Length: 178
Length: 178
View (tube, chains in turn green, orange):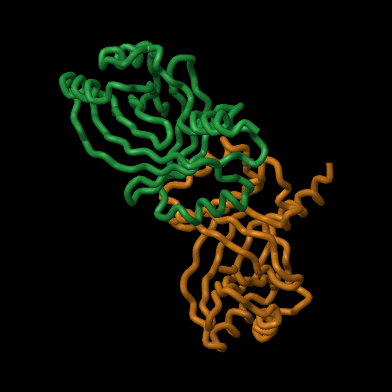
């Protein structure tokens, strides 16, 4: 199963919210998501374009592996999710195996549905506002996601394939360039 | 929390079973346990004396990490267990992260309780019969486990610190030494 996903930076959040609702989208809920990302003991996830994280969202905890992105426009990739009753023992096992915690990513996410897609309007601590559209399926066309974003008033030039983690690490590097 | 544990090879299974019951032990149940052990992508678990496995026992699935053994007599070590609803996605995540499946270990385990201890009489495919005694606590004395085993008719010289996985790998190596 693929996680078919595209993301873009936005400044006109209220306008986009209106367009989602006018296009038949439905507001679901808002929640805070705190992600801890892990570095691999012997592989550079930045180079291999993979990710491993534990997410806390409300009282739900999930271990997620993300494989390399599959095209040049969107963030579509393989994704494996495992629900956890308790995040602590999983984090402990990962640390014992040599995985290291990297920067946390904290955001307020407003969830919408729009057709087959889940739409998220994110306010990410330290980064600002973004829109993410996502669906799970076995195949996809990158152009379909670009068109949907455009129809919501999102500029194609603002599409962003880098993860929030990468953006945060790059920003911190610019602030403190060793 | 420590997994305080000792193991020994046995030939007199019926006699030991009798001694467990005479000492006040209780028979709990018998089950088949199938373990898949994983090799680390960049660390030799045989050298570091760690282990990572997914166990299937009845309809229960568990991911277990075991740290290095803490003394020269017993198998006591740190242990972290995580219950899994489904073993497949966890095995898939481990493979994507570079962990490799090594030999499976399959055994029929009869469970008993004896005081604070859990006692297992194991028949391991390819290896024969063993007794394991185990409790979970924060501290321990190795001699206590040795004395308990002796009281059940187990010879100290038959105590075994190698895991079933190690014993199976060594046996296979002796049969097929490249």
